[in-house]
Image (tube, rainbow, N blue to C red; front, side, top):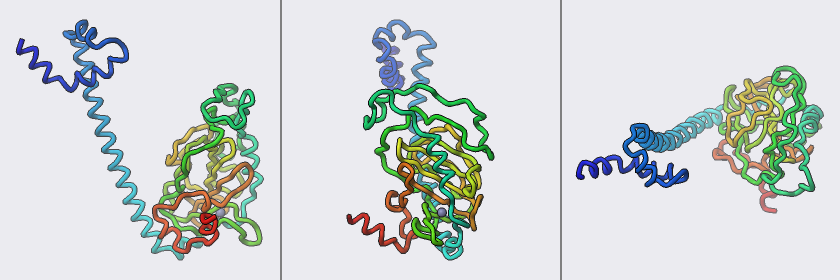
Length: 304
Ligand SMILES: [Zn+2]
């Protein structure tokens, strides 16, 4: 039956893929015997082969897009480096009151594990429970933070790495004493519209402009203890209750709230305590341009 063999060779690749797909359902030989001549079965096999091709293309396209984005970020970084003196003046207009942030953190505590779950790994606690409190949700405008239970996926401890919240920027103000008070964040200046990314996977526990002085602000919870905050945005790209993956675009940088110019006031907190982001973030890919005068405290902390 040369004709039959020829056809088999021609569709060899499709068949190989179809084998993988159908093997999990029932024996492929049986399927071939049963449906081999049916038009719908042939179509399914062809469709599977096409899908495999498309997904290969998608991977290549994603890699290309990633390279393009990195190249564009580097171009913006060079521009910002040239404008460093101006960008360094873009910072908070006054010290923020953290009480409004703490209020959100306290309201948005993750649900307690059901029984003796302290210290257990994420994934074990299948706390599907209460879900979201209803409330006048959604209103990401001037409304005060609504009471939303943290997503059931909030891990006890985030064990992954962190990434920078902004790729191209200039450090305009460090964490630490400033104007006789404590600056509990890191100010990263750039042009309005610079993408701001989630430093780690998490849940949006606040997205709006109801926190006095912070402008359009996003707060993410990454685990039971770790949160991050991004203030003064021109535009928010997420809403309260969303889950985000690491590197997801969450907002566009801006100058809303108490601000002297476009920048992100960025905070990392462990529980209620703000920690120096420079001690937590990895080295930026544009470190030499973002931070040409490295903070000696960072070097000593790393050496410890
Ligand atoms: Zn700041």
